[in-house]
Length: 112
Image: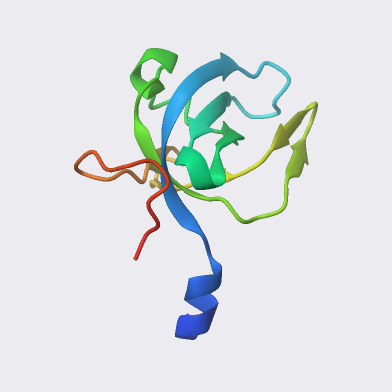
């Protein structure tokens, strides 16, 4: 594992947001949801594709707070433009468990 500096870490904008909409993404190569996430006034609304369909239903995701990188450039994923990277942990079976705060916090707060 290579080390990074504190300055490197500070460049990554990891912020909390609340999922406001979950849509099917049938065009995705691997099963995924299209998420619309509210990161508060400073960052605003961003969209992301998340391969979490095997662990989370649309209903479970709606209203859930997630941790995401919001300062990557937009990335085209098939017909969809992803504007942030929702984070999670890849388990032994390849499924993803989302990284979430354990208590509600204000949208847009930055991971410290």
